[in-house]
Image (tube, rainbow over all chains, first blue to last red; front, side, top):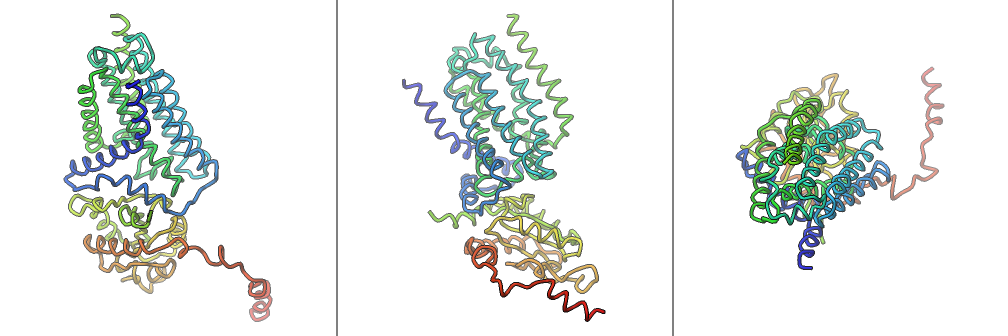
Length: 279
Length: 174
């Protein structure tokens, strides 16, 4: 019974936690560029400011789909933290992204459409790798449940290091970080899918980004098994790796992203799966 | 809870060049650089009018860009402030009185803060933005609502009928 409380508290505090991660990330990114950077609670200030702006919506279905994106992403995170089926979690996450794509297609803005196209392509880039990683975990633990990974005695990292590298290569696509941030591309698309949201409805999409951080770092934590210290180490390593990569690389085109992901990341995960199934 | 105090802490800037020479734009981008670092005030340079609070306009309004200027201003949700950045945007500058320009952006949209200089210095821009934040905090949503749209319906007798005017003008033109 004691074990159940930790995931429930994590699920309830997930947006708060994600906001802190995002605020900390902005500071770290600024320090890497020798700037001072915003205060730690900056994402929450943004949140409170956006709540006060006038509500402008394109049409009600668009705003509703944006909110449903947030709700379904939170649900996917809850399913993952409660230790359920990994394939289910991945497809729930896909559902939440699909809702955002639908919202973007429902407007007449050309930038919104471009962003939706690019998000669909980035799904094509990261989704196969995640599924292969889930199958590899199944091969090792004999179960698709995340609980099996959370409770395994030996950390999964030692048995499937290639899959971890593959995950590190697809996480920038998922979190829309440079060099794979074509989906968001603030200079050319000004946000892409989130372009037409404003005021309190943009908040749903903005907060969903924070939830995405918690989701991705939980995926990283899966590799540590029941070793909490190793898990914390992996998360901190991934955090610095993502920010350093974001600061030091330029954006690649969506074709290069797709080619890289499907050749390098996918083959790494697949070789890892072959090794796991042979041994 | 008074949410108005949080406006000061996260102003998102939209930058629009209404036909200027790019001198002020370079200085605005210099504000984002490590030396001036306006992100420490929580400011982000967004490209999206629907999510921004401050409209930073540079350049005299050329006749090609004035429709876009008004369009962008209309797309920003209230509360919002407008900063005329540089001599051209404030008064027309050296382009004042030319056939293709208007004298400053205040001929088309209401301006809250004028920042002088040709081109403006980053310090001046930051000072102007900080002054604009004080104005942003005092603005209410009711202040910027269209009176004719929301509060007061147009009365029948006061409505101007364009056909009546045309009937008066036509004989005079012939």
